[in-house]
View 1: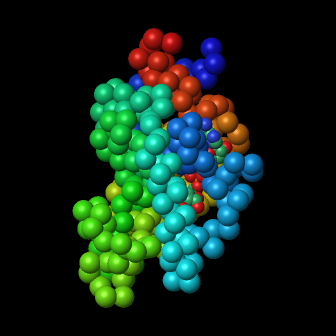
View 2: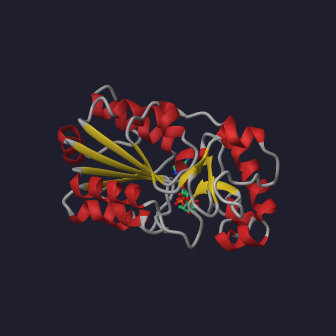
View 3: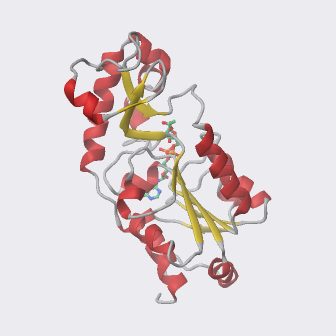
Length: 251
Ligand code: OAD
């Protein structure tokens, strides 16, 4: 069988009380959202992060950064969850507590029905004030003009996407909750991430240090692969469906 999980791991999976799933850009790839680092199609193959995804880039040319994010937002608005997102939502009914910590900013896990999703890097569909970092409502944005629109909170502030840029820290609550879930889980999945960007990349290792088994889903080897107890080499949609079927005993 393709994606067969070894019997010992499957037993551990079946008896797991707490699961943590870390997802990265590869999770959204089959929904049509490009990854960051894949050589031909990745976003950073075409753009330089420091020109677009940094506070300095926004300060230097806010209009350019805002327009680039508007393009990406349009892609995200059109994207729909795939069978892998649905499998993760279904796993919530088989494992007593399942937390998803995602590096993705597209909201696809929530759209698929997952209830407990931690957004480590924010959400591209939300905006916030560039000075105060307070959330800006879509109603406000509808009624004002500007590229980017002004902030309602600060005369010098502008609307900016509510995402974490290079050089910025992650929202503390999100990171704390994800770290607590990592320390507490019996099984940790790492899905569709190169495991290169910190601190997210450390979550599976923290889980392992605290006794969890580690399962990686990715078409290729990553920085994490050597640490994983099991590796499913393939795309997130079919691999996660296979995990679900084996857990249900219907494979
Ligand atoms: P990357 O673009 O670095 O990695 C994508 C990973 O997904 C690679 O390991 C691919 O092999 C894998 N992949 C591709 N297609 C897949 C599929 N269909 N199913 C499963 N895996 C697949 O993305 P991340 O590791 O998520 O941060 O990048 C981490 C962070 O770096 C991003 O959140 C972003 C970026 O800079 C910020 O914007 C703060």
